[in-house]
Amino acid sequence: MTNYLLPEDFRVYVSAQWGVVNWPAPGYIEKILPTFNKYTLQDGGYIACYSHNQEGSIYSVGGGIYVMGQIRLQGGYIGRIFQPKGYEGKDISAAIEFKTLCNQIFPAARSGGWAGGDTGGWFGIQ
Image 1 (cartoon, rainbow, N blue to C red):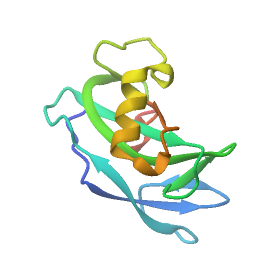
Image 2 (cartoon, one colour):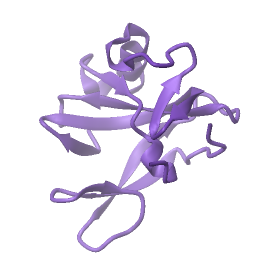
Image 3 (cartoon, rainbow, N blue to C red):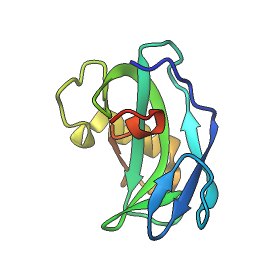
Image 4 (cartoon, one colour):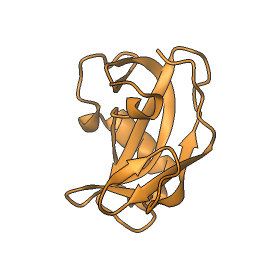
């Protein structure tokens, strides 16, 4: 569980060589990671929405996969992985409910988006 609500204009810093961090660093470019706080109570966390479409994405995680943004839902973190309520221990990337949600909120995914829960790094969760 995290009590943190990220701002909807959450700033991240991106480097082609070193990935993404959430603090200013030399050689990194500031970008806004669209963040939708669909759920605002304390027992929540974030799913990341991914796509193979680079256009409209914020940063790459490699292998032709791009992050479009993130959505706060009810659930909790197991380690650094967020698991939405009712999906504990399940692979949410295959769940139609989250694919639909990502594609509705991030149309740049071109109906090819999916979700993942690896967002705990924003909060220092290891």
